[in-house]
Length: 486
Image (cartoon, rainbow, N blue to C red; front, side, top):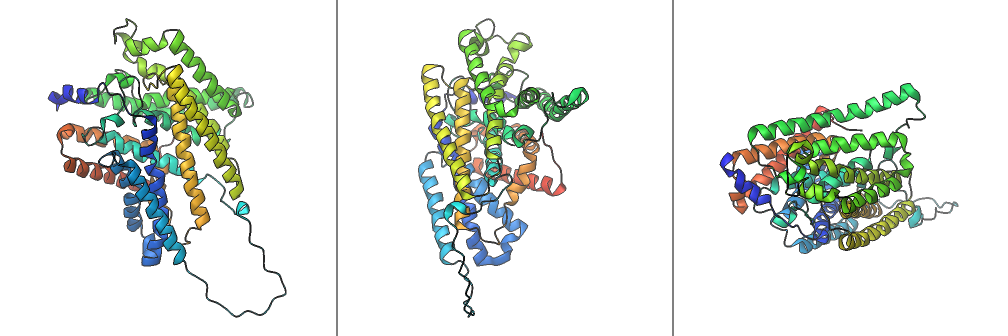
């Protein structure tokens, strides 16, 4: 496949992306498909009874409702997103109505008259909504990973629209937001967000050393994955777009650096200040990009002609953009602290939902203002506009999943409805699954010329690849393996 290297490079080069709105529209399929899953299961329970709880039945159901809709939205339905979402929502609404009409009723019994007054129905705002880690946060993380692993291989085929692929310099493609959202989703459930970390000043000298050791040791596996990725790419001649991270850098190195540096900072800075610290980093970083030549260095190299001489020049995108991703990580910690507060009533969650929507609207206004008056969105530098766009994208998805949870709570889920087997399998092992995703993607690309495949062949390969990854996730889950970072 070495002779295809130049054509592969050209396939990914000089892309300008799409609008942030279309990126949000295509991923809106994810919460819509989750709603479909939860509204479909009660009907299936009514029709088939306890067979719905069978692991393979549940697996097929999850694959059809949670994976295939995203795959279709990223490929042959990409030009019909509005209609697709309307169909998903209309189907869910119909299923809700069917479940309501056919819900089991208790037989009438003759009871002796009671002097006790019947309990007054609880008002809507006092309805209980479980405690612990909210389900919508889990769905945000898991479905985000599902979308990422689909896109990573789909982008190599013609059926994946070029406007969804990573942009060359400025612009907003679907895959541009993936790295930033991955940082956010990790921060969302980090120890700092969960309030389970200890500050370095309260731990004493011995405790401080232990805390620092834990931070570094927790990121070692990620560094190792980065090294494995680097060696495998260089030894196989696998195609790579240098302007994405640089010559030697890759996603795993970025993830390790961001988590390590953020965690060390949060040993000193109170996590309650993470939101303000995120803002300070984002503004200061943009000042360096715009006014002190840092932006020109990242995009043009030290000589102004795209030099790759020396390690710093060779990997300037990956190294410098870490600052922007740290700002996103701190914002994720702040969001996690807000969402993981103890809430047990519908009213509490409804207020949180409204507040997040206010924040989301403000962020979208800031995206437009920053892109117009400061600098367009640029993934290569992870600039201020990119940071704000990533946050608006993540908050919008979170509120969408939260709305699904609210709807399902109000609709009273069927008591026999099982939890999603795929969500349970993916959730503890996102990074491990991502590693297998990279290995499978490399194997496919080294075996066939993906660019030349027909639409039918491309879909067969992508569905098979997605199914294999889901089987791997299921196997890892039942084997009890876990690869987690902080």
